[in-house]
Image 1 (spheres, helix red, strand yellow):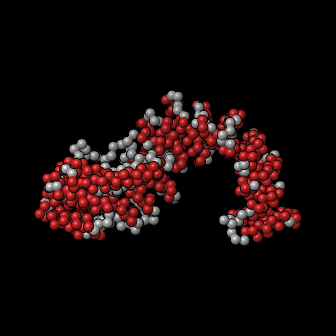
Image 2 (cartoon, one colour):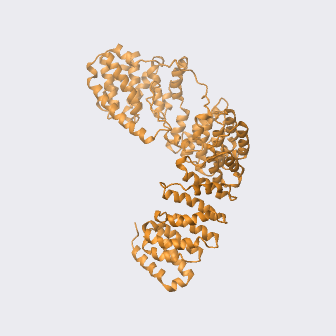
Image 3 (cartoon, helix red, strand yellow):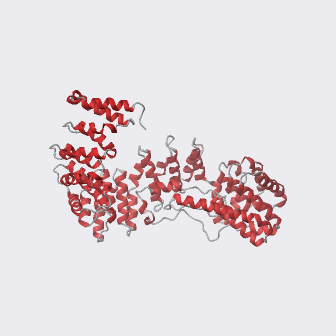
Length: 615
């Protein structure tokens, strides 16, 4: 929206631009044009000065030309008819002896982005491809890509495409890279630029002549090439060897991505390449750029999926700095968890304990989750039931040290399943029940209901009173519908008898199909190679959610796939949630009047689906 006083400013500048005295003084004229650009950048609508600025572009002053071209490109779409007046000046400048003027004219001729001017632009662009100055050829090559965007539905000019292919051997490396970019854009519907053996080896031999982003572009395009023999493959890898350990992270990442693409059938070579990039990745983790550090950490997590011990000797490089942002600290803690072994476990636990008091609540919670002692105990007895006696002995008194809701959920699950072996189980549950009004976590309340019901079945005398108080609160006072409905379900279940309640609640305590896991098995590189050097590792970190389950390993959580469309996933979840809630209401309406077998099926349905969608 234009500023107040904009109309008066436009009138004053129009008088100045039309004043012959100002036009005769080159410095005053340029300063007036500069005022126009400054007012335009401040939000004042200067489109009314278009005709005066068109006249101002007829000058030999290069600085003035640049200023005028900035204005014309900004307002050309609002004045397509008046823009025709600029074409003659631009075409004349395309023949100027000064290559800077020629390149400037070509660039701004294509930046006007008006379909009506295409016929006037094609001839200067064709001449620009054969210009003796490299700066003009650079602009002309990209100009054809802009022209194609203006007329994407028009037929591709084969002569122009052949000319661009020939310029891939231009002595100027920037022209070569610009040709790749232009051909990729023009031939997008045909799969991009055609990469054959001569072009591949030519690009590789000239790779070091390009700048950083030029090398990245070349390496990205070469991923489509497949060597015709193993000898050719290793010749290409030899040419790429120096780039693999480049001090510039973008080049290193693009080279490794090409390595993994070429060596998809050579897993040993791929693993050797991962070993070689350890140094550059660690250097990137110490970069002054926060974004670079975060990106390096995300990609290190990818590599650890195939070589878990890749960074084991350098775990101290992932200790968090005090001034680092929270998202980097949390990512470093995820990497530290991956690097734990028998030698460094004590030091890493001490380090993580220090992060538990971080001023950022999310960072502190992430540190607590990384340690997760009680949750580990819960998972341990699930996969290794012979450890249950040791775990039950360790549970005595640990409720005083729990600070997060997931830890409390895990403790409640253990007390509910193994409560007959823990002497203090009723007293621990009573503390939770007395404080249920102040409990903010929905998952803790629901797990407390289940744990108290299970403990009542094995120790009824000690638990009957507290179970009654808990059910009364959850049914009469609790405002959350999920907690209230679960309490009603358990209340009606008790009316069916203790034996029937026992059949429903006392399920298995472990999964005999699982074994004790010693570390995480290494994944094949091919499972994640395509996502390396893309935004996918960063996106995976943003949609990963910690398990917010009820603390029960029996239940399976909904886990969005990394490649799924997140918006579609959320829409489906909302639809499923509303559907489940309707079904639950129907189930609860007639639950007390049906036989035990149907009620058992209803309870299983409600618990599984509520766990998947409510939490």
